[in-house]
Length: 113
Image 1 (cartoon, helix red, strand yellow):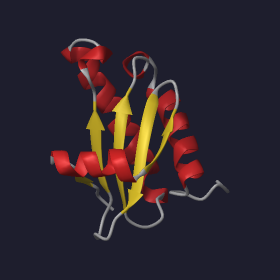
Image 2 (cartoon, rainbow, N blue to C red; image 1 turned 90 degrees about the horizontal axis):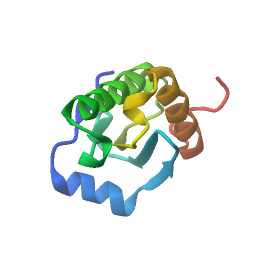
Image 3 (tube, rainbow, N blue to C red; image 1 turned 90 degrees about the vertical axis):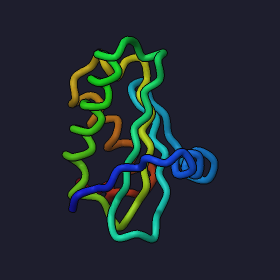
Image 4 (cartoon, rainbow, N blue to C red; image 1 turned 120 degrees about the horizontal axis):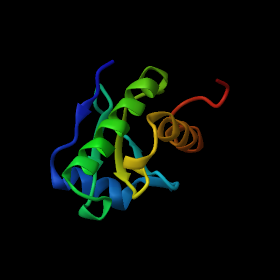
């Protein structure tokens, strides 16, 4: 299952205002069920994160963590991930752990694994 990318501002705003969210030190996750055929993700990294190299690394780390968890997702969801200051400075495994906790709390994946 390959996910689509959220690109339009209206999609991001819809998730910010209507979805459930959970925050941790490395990541903020917004998740909402969608009616489409696949999952859609958007990643936001502000200039507060750092320079372009750090912002791009944050996006790569988030994308890598999501691709590890994607096969376990139940149903079709829209996600927006917001990078935090620590995201570019930690290993992908730390972001993966946080993302997995967020997904379990939001009911996106089963908590048994």
